[in-house]
Amino acid sequence: MFAIVEASGRQYELVPGRFIDIDMTAEEEGATHVFEQVLMLVDGTKATVGQPYVAGAKVTGKVISKLEVNAVHGRIQSTIKSNKIIVYHMKPKKGTRKKQGHRTQYTRIMIDAIELDGKVIGKAEAKSAEAKTEVKAAPAKKAEAKKASK
Image: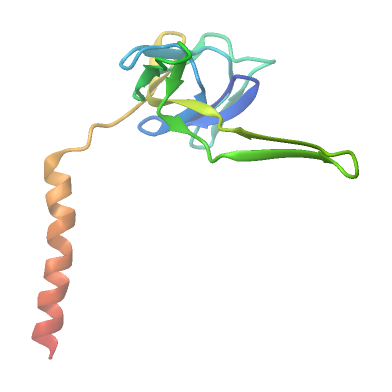
């Protein structure tokens, strides 16, 4: 189950239980973010395509990144940033040089549910502690089997 939504002029594939980084928003950590411009819903082999958006569909998520206010400039800044991009302009034989750096800032959102007409059709599953211990126990059994075969 996934949805394709439009946010910040880009299209994203959203799956419940995963996170997405979108352009920085002014939302606080723990706030609910709603994507209402859903372009397409896919559930196994069944797909619903909007014209341009799917009517009554929305995707909800929780903001999990921390937003900080920069004390020097008074701007809201995210702790999640892209790699630095260096922009360098130079005009040969003129003595003109200009160097700038840029880092895009993001807000990280954990996708909770995909809804259609008020019904939840895709929901994030909580990971249980039992499943984690079973995964850790499996490699130990393989090691015992190798020792027994020698």
